Image 1 (tube, helix red, strand yellow):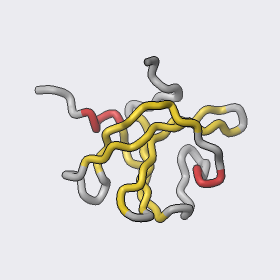
Image 2 (image 1 turned 30 degrees about the horizontal axis):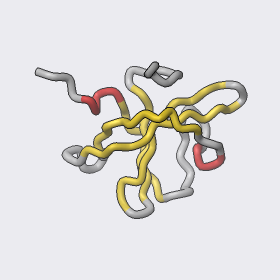
Image 3 (image 1 turned 90 degrees about the vertical axis):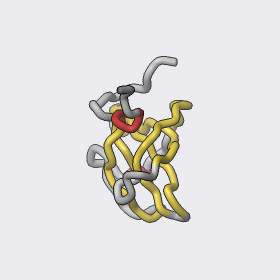
Length: 93
């Protein structure tokens, strides 16, 4: 059986746009995001049969890179995800 591509990401949470959420203790809405040019397949935490394609980003806080995936799951509602197992750098192309 092939591996499920959504197994590489674990949900952090779902929030309305610009509402606080923490990824490694940091609110991403208060930081600059850099695209890694990667796309992640993720499951909606409340509706696991829904699979979404979201972008992968890095934000640098106090010299530390935090890798995460984020995307608008529905109008104004954003999902945030962390790599699983945890990794701090984008994969090589």
